[in-house]
Image (tube, rainbow, N blue to C red; front, top):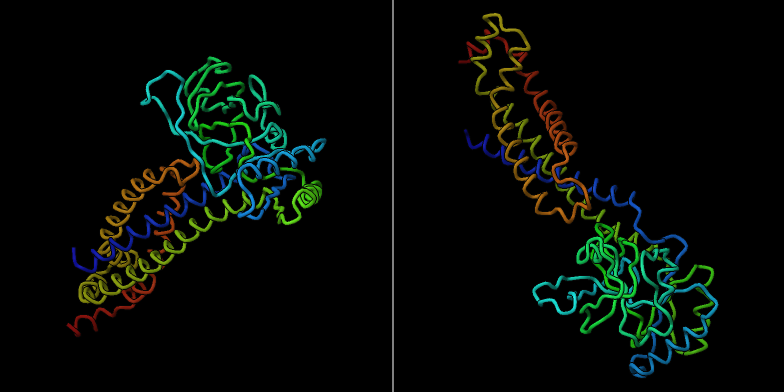
Length: 369
């Protein structure tokens, strides 16, 4: 293969990799948008507080949170340190008490009150929810994924486990939810809200103002912010969408370069084989045969580039499976679509050189040689 053909094959391969990646990423975002997250998004506001850091020790934070919980009594609310789909992720080692340390697995953990599950409509599957008396008790809830991971079809309620630096008794199992990444359900531990840090309150939008007023009454220096939970979800979607769009723009740029490269190679072939084309036309070659000659001379580089690109795209998509949000990395629609796009680009690139080849005058071509 000539240097021109090698460069063309490389351009085609790069465009395949980027376009397949972008297509799979867009499919992944669309797939997640249509999925039930397992918790309520619309109609929930996250009320957060900013208190004077220098004046608030852990004991003062507990006092503020206790007053807040008492004054919110009668309102449908949930308290947590970290709302769903937050930027932060808290992880811990989890294992059954008495089991070797090498049986521990990384799990997510949340610190919440009982109302957290009520506000977000996360169902209780087995056992019981937290109670106000559980603030200092060593009890936890786990989600279904974690329950299946260690106990299969057995009930974990009443069993002991090690997590978050302590020994706990499992008192309940709650439903699975995509509450951290929206791309997959992860094993999760819920511990009772301790109140050592400033809380975040989950309420309906109609009650957000009342929560802010209560916080201002408890601590006049408190700064309160209320945002819809949907904003967190949309931010996550936007981040995923931006990644897909960047890949798409790079893929489009690579496709343009490949199209220009194909056009250049086709034009070069016509220029170099003008005499041969003239002889063939003098001997009665039909226009389709002439076009086939032009395309066949460069199709090898395009086919090789397509094959290499598909191979690298399949390998790369498998390695980036976690970023595809449940979409099959070998989704045939993405690969066939990219192949069709390149075929159209190749036809467009060959149009002008093919017309030039068909206009070759056999006598002039022979005289020129």
